[in-house]
Image 1 (cartoon, rainbow, N blue to C red):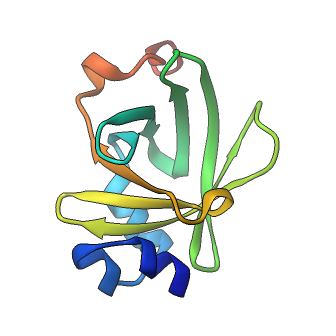
Image 2: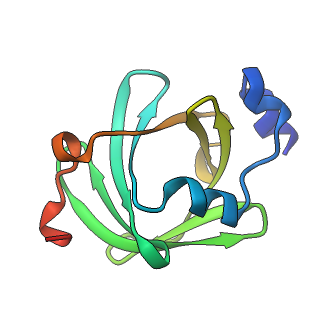
Length: 126
């Protein structure tokens, strides 16, 4: 946790990672955009009931999956990606900061987006 706190700045540095319940409350029913740093888009994810998700990369590839809480991490399992993808998420103003377990030291900005414009995987939800 010390390494994670060192890479964060501002109010998020002083807070603990979100619990599964807090993360679920923040994300359910929303589409979130992930960016590296402030402005480099990485992908979007729609969060549905029962912790189900649809992930899309910037180039439009879509995959379905689910998330679960594992100790202090939020982990994702996708139908066509190898291995679970685990994160720590920290509140920061209206957004989140996500720290990917496989890339400690790199923080992602996670924000609510307008899914009508930016979500490429509507075929999974219609």
